[in-house]
Length: 231
Image 1 (cartoon, one colour):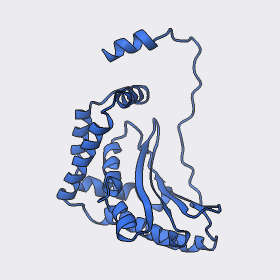
Image 2 (cartoon, rainbow, N blue to C red; image 1 turned 90 degrees about the vertical axis):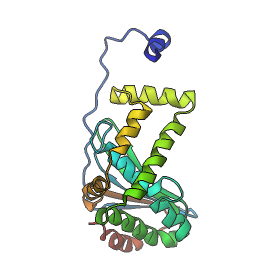
Image 3 (tube, helix red, strand yellow; image 1 turned 60 degrees about the vertical axis):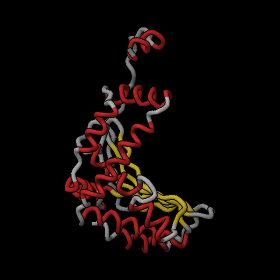
Image 4 (tube, helix red, strand yellow; image 1 turned 180 degrees about the vertical axis):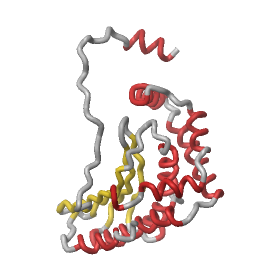
């Protein structure tokens, strides 16, 4: 029915002219993984991430999604709780997994006091390493899955959000997964899979760190030392 209305109101004869295509995205590894952009701001803005290559149809898409949820879905999530509530290093911090048609990335982010940026990176690295070294409990993972499923339903409540999801899925994935299908994929993720995904993607080989703020370039060596724990 949705397809019928789309064709009626939005359909048009396809052009004979072929659209230009782009080569598949490729991550070029660099010797220097840390970039500091000097700017006179009150906070230092950090993005610490990894090029995962996990695209829309990749088998690791939903495990990566759960790893992101463990770190930053809700105030009790690991990364948010430690950086914001436990240590008071940021007003807001979290993680995000972003998929595209041919690649994907995972990143952590936050705004911190410039003199606390090294400590913030140490905490982030520690939490990432914990996911690699320790298997998450079934109980914690079940709670994260429930939150994820609830967020799927909540985010699709409005007609605008539903239309955006349907059109984006069809355009980029050539398929539309129902909320029930999404929840099923989420439920399939096991504690061991979470550890496997963390080991696979959270390493220095595909790491990139960007910091914007009044950071002394001498801090680069301290930041580099903090990142060495990420093996």
